[in-house]
Length: 462
Image (tube, rainbow, N blue to C red; front, side, top):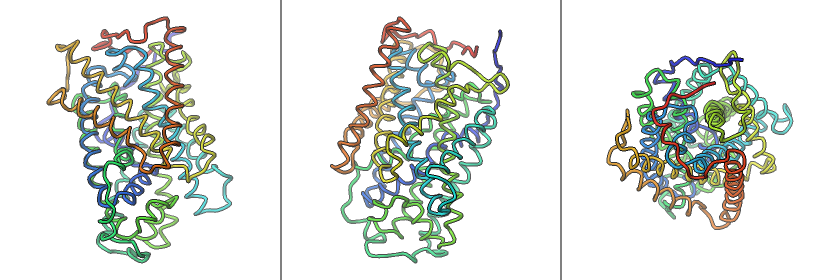
């Protein structure tokens, strides 16, 4: 039976822009930002500057790779073409499956915690989170166009919330300042400043622009719009995040920012008053939906592409005959955060180490992507490149060194070193062992045998 699905290319720039920053404007990223602000004081601005430069390098690398190989497999295809099957499998599972396991779990626990405070007793534990997840799975099943429209709405709402809240807080409008207490205000931000120790937390609020690259195959004008979506999106959201955090530092104590389970709720009430609680419930749902929706839209496409290369279970090849959606992969990705919730015992106070572990795994995959680009430039210098990273290889070398340093120093406090690196080490070791066994026993191929023929090859959607 021929089950080939023809996917219409047509996703425009603004939708791609919203998808590129969809992961960035989630609840867990907002919480990580506020925690970094509390820990670092004004040092969070330095950390944000470092993170911004690193992510500019990252976006440039992914833009070149994506336009060389506009495939739904994304990073797996780039690594397979340059480094071989093992780095391809390891990079995708470390960079996207692990964060989906930890990061989305944190996201779902946050939204459930917020809704339980606002509407106590209305749903069983994690009921709100599961309901939201089910709705987003359904929307993503309906295809990439529905996903893109949904993401546009969610992202615009979150950018308005971040910017408006920061502006009102800084200017002293509405109810801002009503909860001011000792240790609050710009003066407190000048004490005990640190920078490097919170770069990992700040990076979590800026990573993810490359989620747009697996959709290059579906974009109306990928050569023009994919790089622009990542660069402009990263810049816009960095400005919005900085403004949001500066406003928070004016109203909340650093201790509150560091220790509150839902500091963004405390912030909203400080700015807009008690009436903000119900409105914030909608914002919390929107933020979580933005992050989860982006992952549900992009990661199943990556897994489908990997299945076509034999790198994961063949069942991930299955597409919906009507919508062209990789529905088996979609269900698998939807289950990942539920596993993470069980892993953490559903305890919202355990979100910080989960976020840092997810970020560290993600950064390792970025380092592999930079290495993949370096290898392709050296092995295939004359291959068609609709976009070329300027100043090659300086951005890639700087990013690899910078990201490696951030991973090693990712724990902002000594007591977090063991939980962060224990979780990270266990998961990455498991991925490496399973990936190696899969390649040798089931694929029957070498671990590091590259497939440069993928460069310029048209993807097969059968």
